[in-house]
Length: 178
Image (cartoon, rainbow, N blue to C red; front, side, top):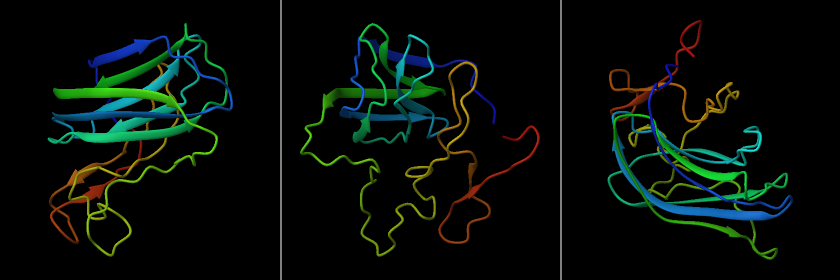
């Protein structure tokens, strides 16, 4: 997969985490880009750049969408090293608003599998035909030396080979392709 050579970053330092504690990160976003899945949010420990309790691609939409991410810190992060980091990796626009990182109370159940909105169908898989682009789908990959990763979706939306609807997903594997 080709990696972008330029990007826009928005970040805030001073984020401390306590090992074993549950947290909820939430924010509102909207945007547009040449690649609809060209934005991401990460929470990192800059002390060694090796710990990423959150790495999540963001589907860019024209309307404000709330994202909620529940997670548990698996190690302590000193405030001097913790950073929340939004990135736009393609030509486009990204709006971010009302960013909150809150500790969860012990009585609150954690949501480790955030769901996308129900779409009024009996199919339990939202966006099963990729009509909403890449929303709701992701792949996981290996961390690269510069801290990027293959999270997001490896593959491209194809408008020529749809079985149902207008779009399908094409994943090409092989040397020089992934």
